[in-house]
Image (tube, rainbow, N blue to C red; front, side):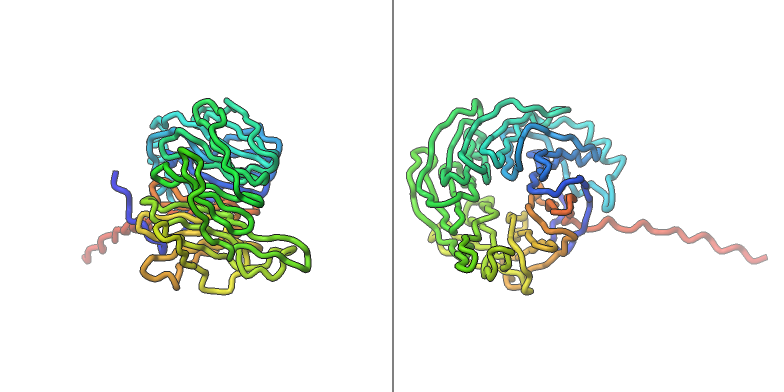
Length: 373
């Protein structure tokens, strides 16, 4: 099945998935059929985009933000979901397809990492590991599914075996909370980023520290409140591994209220130099997620009192296409086929935006004119 053309200007709400608790994170599963969303009621909710069914994953005793997947298969295109609701006949056909087995791996505020049998009818916990002293901020899976990376408030990055949950290696060197972690697509290196805007690159096999990248634009120490604010809140490699995108907050004027502006930094992985991507307007808030689309565009989401999604085209980075989101967007996920993005709202709603053209309107047949007698 051919994937429809993706264009940011097509962005429109395809689905609104509601939950009674404010949301924290969201991730599409490897097939793209399921969307996993974490909430402030300590639950993870799995939405079946083919049937609309919501399944609760209960087991964590605190908030979850980090979620990633090991294994999986099949395919599901969000372009076959009708705007405003599920496309019944198509959804039924897709619902009958099988999705390959995979594990959802999630990390919580108490430092616990759990494995779930993600694609089964009722997912259950298959393994629990005490991973960090303090919040597990993010988790990531190596491209071949062999290793899991976690990071947290204990200033550490840890590597684990996805197969059995055993520790493989600890990467030490950050001097503050580690906010994000991502494997390079080649699986040979890993990037981690902390509260004060230091991005470290490591060799996976040896654990050797290779270099630091400067993302200090994401950090400020507010002397009035004696508090640090910032951190790399979203991080993603481009599919070819040539670019690392980081999202966060900059120009902070009030740490207590989190007053500042969203920012995306694009690092060239050859020379380590960064390019800034900013909203066109003076929007206040934090960038919470960032990713790449098949056409090369960079997409990021964030917010404060309200939300935004920004799309930057490589040829015109100064003029991003902007989409208003009805709620503070606290996380963002790109669909595996690149045809949609989802944002987790502080109002308890997940908004799924399709990026494909609207279907052509059905032509109305004009009744024949009555014959003159």
